[in-house]
Length: 361
Length: 179
Image 1 (cartoon, rainbow over the protein chains, first blue to last red):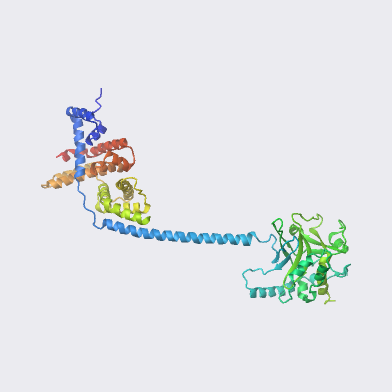
Image 2: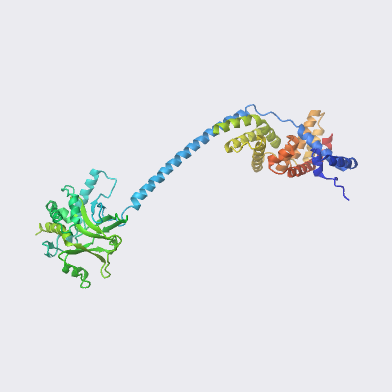
């Protein structure tokens, strides 16, 4: 049987470190007395340890530890600066993100779906109808004087670019309400361009929106609109451009946004309807009291109903009635959507047009 | 908080700095390198602020010293400054020392130590480290177990293995060392 103490290096090592029990120590000693080989190994191990311990170490530099401490001060200062820069950049980054978020929220997410000419509508309080719209300059960064100048430039440009058909009506017919009826094209549109006109009282415009109701008072107000104050270029500007609508329905809390683009057509008589839309689907309406507004389909999904279009000094007021979630009927055989408008509400518009035609006559 | 840590750190440097330097010197055998390693150890401890005071400071510092030294020898191995002599050349070197004209006892002792340290350098880093902790620093098994984070039984077998390895390296010179 093999002796468990013979060449047991682990035990030898523990023996040198005095980590064996007293009993094992005695047994190992008796083995070492008999075994010269194991005794030699233990002696050599002990000798190597002794030599290692006997080695001397040179003293370190006197300033070693002081230099370490001073070095750490530098590191601490640098780390503090880094932290400060990090916090500052984090704060700036947060501000930038917040600014971008606000910009996106107000400038991108809330812009009208159909961004036509920069005409903005506000909402009349308390009722579903009402409206108005106010044309603004396209650049929100311009100052008041710059905007005015830009507006005047636009005015001149618009006059030059207006199509010929917009300048001269090709035909006219007698309207049951007294005004002359012109070509169906080129009616809707605007581009406000005016800088020095008398400002029409907004309240009268709001009254105009109620023209359907048989109120004598409201009727008076409708007639009181200062048509004569319109200049000829203003009247021209009514033709051939677009109107942007930004509507707000207070009841369901939704924003309804839309555009009446260039090409919208007003039809005020049976003859005009037949010429534009053909013989089919002739509407059964009283042309004495209503007309039609044909809107291109792409922009006619806003769910509003035009009640009146009134031009003001530097703005075009469009009175409409919100139809809530109801969508307007779409004619499949016509690329327009029909909108029936009370003729009464358009008296103003027609009179203006008549005024604009009269100088040519 | 940081100021408190800084005061504590300065105290640690003054109290334990010499121990760290000694260990670094034992590991690398060079005064300049030992100072560099000591400095790096304390800077690392300061930057990490990893010592929480749960154990004795020296156990943490010894562990960091070992890691810094391992990185140090890894860098050195990429651009070795000196190479260990072969066994045969060691014998020659010993013969040279032995045959030198009338060496004094102290010189002989120093040469013996140098020879054994060279043998120790030839061991693996962990073997060298644990043997230095036990034989030179005189740490107990329990302390070594805390420093290298392993059980006491493992420490015991590792020390035993290291001793056997050292004896194997020193075997060619063992008769001379005994004189």
